Length: 534
Image (cartoon, rainbow, N blue to C red):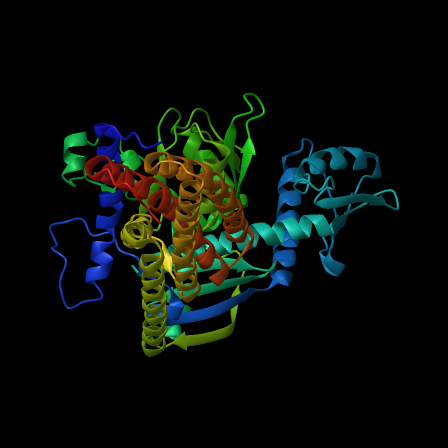
């Protein structure tokens, strides 16, 4: 327990100093001193309650999703029946009373119409129900009624898409760590630290993103593209993920292609032949015809999917894509395919978002919160230091030095992870300081007990750390579980508290148990004291 070879001491000091050094830029930002620009400068972002900013609550219109589903189904039915040979004649399609209905002119062909339309209905997620209820009335009238499970799934997909669109647009401001989360079934909470004007935020969310599909210019030389030079009639479009595709961008045809406003849907699904995750896309009638023509004329050529002026991906056209729907393959995982599907659906907000609440938080209030939080931390820390040194002498000094490193490491980990510090996070910070000292109290009291039982100094220290560590690890594992559950199921301030608490628990165990044990072992080896914690 007290044997620390040189490599282990070097490793422990390296971990400690790296994370402690990462906290320095954040500490410098609170002082008149400037951190050198040439050095790395990870920073802790301040939340809305500390930095001030704007808060708005958006609410979607669920009835709009219902209307969109009816209109989409009407268009799909017309397209499906038009593709049948011979053509299936039907009467006018009605979308009254929240359902789609029409009459098949020839009653003997109702079953044929049913077979053509049934593929338009699918399962509603994992509910076991279908998204549309199919009925045949009076022998020749077909009625499709959206199920509640299907509507719920559509609203959920629309809100996921809207949340992602909102996130992309706010990130374009370059603000620090905006908070954008779903609240309930139809609301989105948006908090942007540092943005003082909610109107600017509302104007931003009212804009429409631009989605395009363009052919890749295969005549462009890679060296020219890297220098930003495009062939005549083409342009260079940067990649959305330069780390994955490169920073040079992609040369695409400037004219032609298809606008994203003709894309009606994009969902993550699975290839029926290989069962690999893919992205299924669906165009409206006009877009489907253009897409069929585009792919028929460009088999075995890549085309670029461009969102907000950046290339998301450039899949290859393996065969003509007819019928207005297609699949994008690319070695996806379920998560990456779903992310691409959300990005494709992010061409425009799927539902109108109405502002139901807005407010601004002034920086003065945040500064006051920081000041009071710092006062609480300083007073609490000073009281702890005085108590621990008075009770345990030199071992108390070791515990206090470990406490300083613990604070630095918490700040360093938060800075490296680019997390956001909120007022509840400061509360979690203060709580972990007490937990860190508590570990040393357990260790030192156990050492004192072992000395009273007659053990020698080295044996008492070794047994004290060994036995107390078990209780410390057991107690902190339960705390980590609690912090993890708060992070998974909590929102806003609760998550901020959980993040700081979780990081603090891990660093406090590292500093209070491992670091102090190394220091005490070095001290015993050098000084060989005859008494400790009398």
